[in-house]
Image (cartoon, rainbow, N blue to C red; front, side):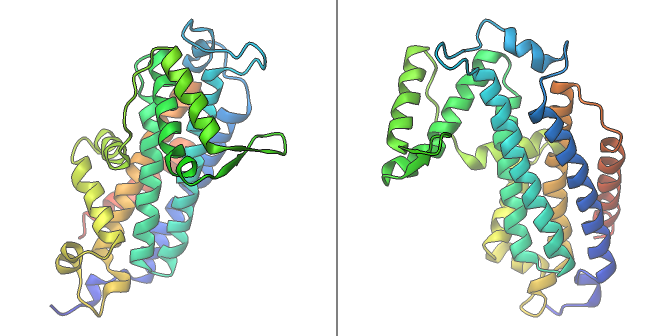
Length: 277
């Protein structure tokens, strides 16, 4: 196969993709910041979750399980936004494989956020949060790592793991194994109306430079800046990003003067480029 100019991501395409994503990330950061740094708007679903009888409150510290879940959703979404921001930077340099790694990481983070956001009730939301946290603790606990305790000290990850397991048992929560690929595929599926597993598979094969993506989109001369692969990765990342941040906006009833405009612009840019593949 011979690589032609139209197969490569040119400077104008790179500029359009990057600028739209930079604007989207900036607006989303502001929105997620409002969700995580201030009490929920009275009357919002987020505020109602605090008064739900399923909310667990630590009697000695006053910490709320709902507040912990809200913080976790914001934190993992901000991680997704940082990955998207770096994706845009690499787009300007027309680096496809490294950008693909960031797109996949962004979608995985969004999958974790959506897994908790999509819970049908507060009890399930807390249950899912505990299972996600236990999944994250598996390797740190196995290898004897220590975690910051928030007070300047450190605590063994295995101790935190043990406490969470006891909490799960005492509350009668169901243990479930978290598969990152399943969460990522689910959020893409919800955002794009289907095909989540296929789209996530595209990002995975792209991240690893696997043969299917290479043989479909490029040869050895064009591997670093394939137009089709880069636009595909951008679509697979931006669609769930817009979806999840929109869900956060609804949960907290946040008003943003820039979100709708920047989200629509990013989708329009990628739709236009995707339609020309």
